[in-house]
Amino acid sequence: MSQSGLLAGAGQVAYLDVDDTIRATHGYAKQGAGYGYSGVKGLNAQVATLSTPLAAPAITGIRLRKGSSASAHGAAKLISESLATARRAGAGGLVTVRADSAYYQQSVVAAARRGGAHFSLTARMNPGVVAAISRIPEDAWVGIKYPQAIWDEREQRWVSDAEVAEIPYTAFTSRRQDQHVTARLIVRRVKRLDPTGGGQDELLAAYRHHAVFTDFPLSMLDAEASHRDHAIVEQIIADLKNGPLAHLPSGVFTANSAWTVLAAIAFNLTRAAGVLASKLHAKARTATILAQLIAVPARIANRARSWRLHLPRNWPWQSGWEALFEATEKLPMTA
Image (cartoon, rainbow, N blue to C red; front, side, top):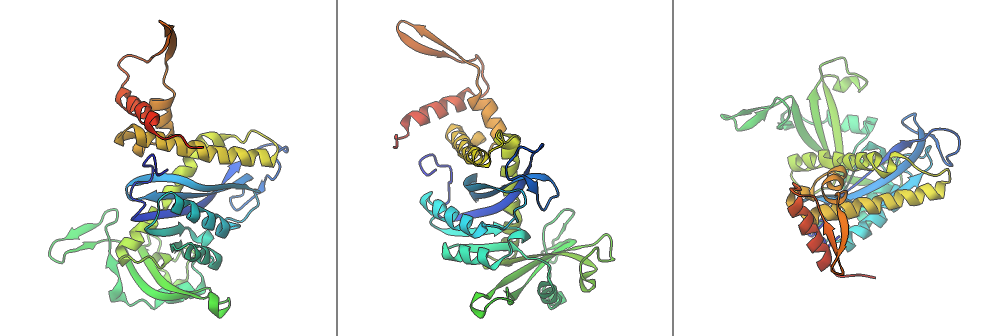
């Protein structure tokens, strides 16, 4: 990763995102297939990705699990292993583990801290979180740039249906005292179109609230915006499901597990190829890199006892392909 420049900027700031997905299966021959949280019969793939503000994500950990597995099952181990991989890949600065509410667990926080990272988790709207939100004073809410927001020049602030505030919060208080975690509860609220509450506590009926539990040492607005970028891991999952994970080829669970690991390796190699080729391809989707740099129609010919590769004329991405070819020749060979 470091040799190809795949994770530019990792020495300063990096984000480890964790999520999982159900890969649907059909028939009765797939070992481990079952019904999980989505109600879809299949196998569950848990993924950890590492990205920076300057670089698109690379996969640092992946595992295939039974379809009935809970989202956060084994997450602490995956995070520990992925943080170790991230450090070896050059992530020596500020690293933050981000995840959704399925991973709002003390074990996830503990794994992040053991690995020297911060955490940013979507908080579940349990009674404790709801009570904490209700204690936030009305004048503490700050408008943020959001769809249809208006900038007020006179007051130098955003006039928006979305506002953010924060309050100190201690989580996991049902556990032992030494496992309690005190950090920041950053809350974004958006006005409801349906003011009846829509399933949240009546105390919060006028707004939809989205809480983030974090120890991320940034300003409130930057920390909240950074957490929303956690959705980038879903793009990686979509890439995998549109590519090698479109079909798990075997009925044997261990074979499909190996296939999943190979899919992650292929994804990272493809991403590295894009970085070496051009700035245009550095953040391109896998399908784009395949079409423009890898699946290139060419003809091999032997002339004057030398091999020649005849590439298409007027290929729009010729410069990128040549840059990739030259860069791979210069990379040192490793055992």
